[in-house]
Length: 352
Image (cartoon, rainbow, N blue to C red; front, side, top):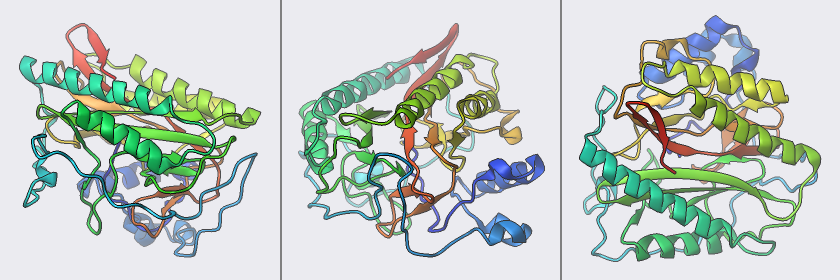
């Protein structure tokens, strides 16, 4: 889960822009310490500037589902037992994560701890999604996941994760229908034809493990089912190119092509990320073609996530007033699957 702070504006889908424009935009976001910004488009491309809105969000459905337009009541944040080790941003006083300019190479001992954290994240996700049914609230799912994680002496990484304005108030992210990512668990009850992405990250023995999955609550239309299939195929395509010596830009190439082959769009501003001792590390893993990643080569010991957000209509997004929930501008559904990966001598390990 890439929890970096997003601008409160719509990012117009870059899929219709010339390659040079898209390349310059990606370079500008990378140069700004992973903070996604529309300033480059505003200044340099007046046509695209007309498509950056600051209006209220009024989505409409493109199928048999109810678009999410606002966050419902968010209950008080859960507590974590004092004996559980906390990441630096959740300590008292909180400290910012210190990131290296280089992609970290994990030692064998760190890799073992990462494997344990990722295994717990997978188990927590499996445990949580089995409770999904019509009528349950996303807050109830958050409680289920939180209790499972702390019972295994781990910390739920999203809880109190900082942004420039607000810390994240819950232990997991639950993104329903047209929510692309960072949905805050609340009191809304799930409906039979909702789709929901459950994104879980745990901090165990000094390492973060991150994974997510989109499921249908009970039933969906054909297009909704195909969107899920596309999202899974995009993740699988990205994983398939990972091995020592591969370029990180290879991931975006195959993910973008797979989405286009299905007739859907990659949400380009949402990226994967390095992971380990920090929740978010280098590299920034684009899910579209990024010529500026061509010199970043995969090496044994590198750990990162692939988590393409695939949109039903196009990749335009904006952030709701809660400062976290990222939604598709057009109200179309979004599906996402995520794994944490580790590059090893003979290929890649899928840790979650």
